[in-house]
Amino acid sequence: PSEDYCYSLPPLTNTGNGGSNYEECHGDCDGDDDCIGSLVCFQSDAGGGKVPGCSGTTIDATDYCFMPTVHTGNLALTFIGDELATGSYSECEGDCDNDADCLGDDLFCFQRSSVAGTSNSQVPNCDGTGIPSEDYCYRLGAAPPSLSPTICSTTPVVSTAQPTGPITYKPGENTASDADGYLSLSTGLSAKIIARSGQKVPLSDCTESDEIFHTLPDGAAVFPSADGGWTYVSNSEAGSSSTYTGGVGAISFNELGQITGYNMIQTNTRRNCSGGKTWWGTWVTAEECGGTGGVFEVHPNGHTNGDASTKRKTLLGERNGRSGGNYEGVAYYNPSPNDPGTKPSFFLTEDAQDGPLERFQPSDQTLSEAIASDDYSNLLHEDPDMTATTDYLNIISWDSEDGGLTHTGTFDWTDSYSTGAAKADNYFQQCEGIDVRNGMLYMTCKRNKQFFILDLEEMTYAESHTDGGVGASGPFTGQPDQIRALVGDDSLVYFCEDVGDSAGIHAKDSTGKYYTIAQEEGSYLAGETSGLAFSPDNIHMYVAYQKNGFIYDITRDDGRPFGGETLAIQYHGMNDGGSLFSRFLRGGNKKN
Image (cartoon, rainbow, N blue to C red; front, side, top):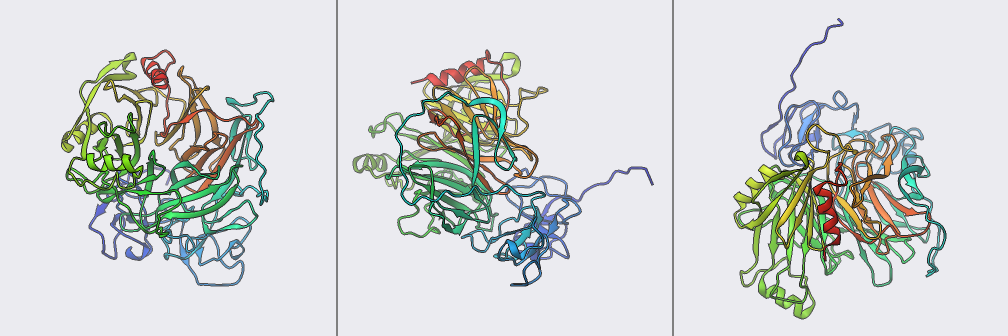
């Protein structure tokens, strides 16, 4: 009885989408009803993920049937009826309408039906898809973090006074915490939750948003508004290859940083992972959805026709025989904004083993017309004179430095997709985060935990393993995913973290030193941090805890801004301050 035995798990088997009675570890299911018996449908991430109780890894965003509870400890979603008496629904049961419908003070109603385009969203700590549009009670495992109380103000007073007191922010000295005690913070910081998946967003006038905040918040950015406020746009990574439940939500702020509204500005898409800003003030959102993912453009105020389901698909990821992919981040380089003879470049990463780094340059005619009219709305969509080009990163040389911790070399661009894919497979697999600042392209690739810096003018690069290299260990435990950096007086690069529990925000300065800015205490927030962005005045740092959908607003107690510009990628790891890689990073910060 005390002996242990080896056993094997059934392999993942994809027999195609649109079927029924899928057996354990078989797919591609769309919902629990597609699975045989008591099996439920596991909504998998993009390629490379694991399905509980099955061997092998997922390909693209294929979904598989599995046995709940046995392999995860979670209960399966169970529909027991509509409009039952208060307190009738136990954990993972529905259809609830509010928290009072759930049995006990530690259960909460996760509302999916009121969220535009997210009727099939994953319910935290429950298995399966349940019945789309039905809402279920769930447990976080402890008292959940609470939304911060709203201070009502219909006529905010704006102060122009500058902080004069002592500086209290000490990056890396984590002595503070948020009000609930779930987030440890560097000395001199405060944090509050401003939005939570499955709940309406509290507004500054003591009302609530009409729409419920979206699930699985991911890549994000901040756009300034004409009235002095700003908008925080946030992707939703919900959905699957055939379930269009993702999109983009937008939280609106006034000039004091108070929330004035929330709504979905893009629906009818799926697995919106990361994206990027354009210089004309729009958001480009990318689907991480196997061979069918697209890249779409949306204004932070929504589409001009007012219909969030409108899709303006760009030419990114659609040329040279490509029809989609596990697309991630978008960034641009525009060294001569008013010169139609110098084309801007748009870069696109892909979370795939052979996903190339794509460079798109728009058509001559479309660019000239955009500069003349100051209307760039068609720049990523039209190629009337057939002069738009798409090519891919081609690593030419790969030289070891710093005992193998760093690689440097030269690169160019190739119009051969197969060559670009082969170079990715050899040198930079599964890249996600990307940004461009001052002619330097920053990119993170999670498969081998790499951080690249490419000099777009000199055509040279430096690469470092973010975990300190093979056999070494870095200060952070997760994979590189997205990153935001402040390249200002404090020269800190701020990173999010992709890890199961205890994810946080970390920073690296130009000498190679690392700091933990904020980190989860326990496992209540759950999952990776993402959506890191700063308000236009850099007073507010926004970050999402993705799995359970919490958005934090972090500020300095001394009233000062966090820094200068922002950089949009994630990174984890350690390099000596005197390494060639760190010198390359410092050079990138100072490059004109």
